[in-house]
Image (cartoon, rainbow, N blue to C red; front, side, top):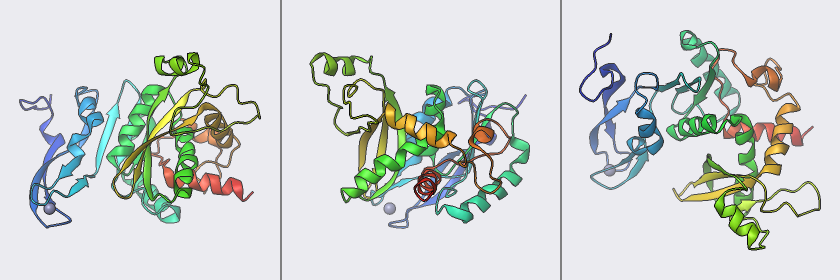
Length: 279
Ligand SMILES: [Zn+2]
C-alpha cells in the first residue's frame, strides 16, 4: 500500500512547481496534480470540475493564466482514461498527428483494455471529456458541432479561441416547458437552430447542447445548438473517413477502444467539416 499524507492523496501525485507570470515575471510556487485517479481519490472529480486549481491569478500584477501541465485522468467507473499533454491541440495538421503518435509510443503501457482513451491539450478539454462521458454522449459528435457555433460567431466578427461543452438541456426541463407552454416556440437566446425541413414546429422542443465559447479577449459566451444539428454531425461521423486519416480507418473502428489515446478537438472537427465541403 502506498503512503498517503493527511489530505488523502498519494504524495507522488502532487508536486510543487515554479511558475513565472508571463506578464510581470513574478515567480510563484504552485501545486500540480499529476494524476486524477477516481479509483483512489473520487473526491478529486469535484476539484477538477470546479477548475479553480488551473486558473491562476498573479498576486503581483493580477494577470490571469490557465495552467496546463502533463497529467492523467483515470476513472474506472466511467472507463475513461485521459492524457493531458499541454499544447497537443495547438496547430493541428501533420504536426499534431506526429505529436499524438509519439505520445502514444511513450504511453503505450498506460492503455487499459475496455477503456475510452482520449488525449487533451488543456484542463478545459479534460473537464469537457468527463462531462460528455457522464452524459453518455459521443465526444466526437459534440466536437463536430463546435465549428457550426464558432463559425456563426466569427461571422459576427468575434475572435474565438475555443469552445467547450457544458450541458444538454432537455425539452422536458422546466425552463423549456415554460417556453413551450407560454406559446413561444422560440429557441432560447444564443441558440443556433438548424432545421432540415421547412417545418419549424419543433423549434423549442428539441434538446439543446450548450457550450462555453471562449473569445480571445477571455470573454466567455454561452451558446447552444439544437438536436437536429447533432444528428447531422452524427451522420457526418458515420459517413466514414472520419478516423485519424492516415490509415483510412472508419469512424466505427475508432469509436471504441484501440488502446491508443485519441485527440478529438476543435482542429480535428474543422478538418472533418472541410473534407466534407470539398468532397
Ligand atoms: Zn504578474
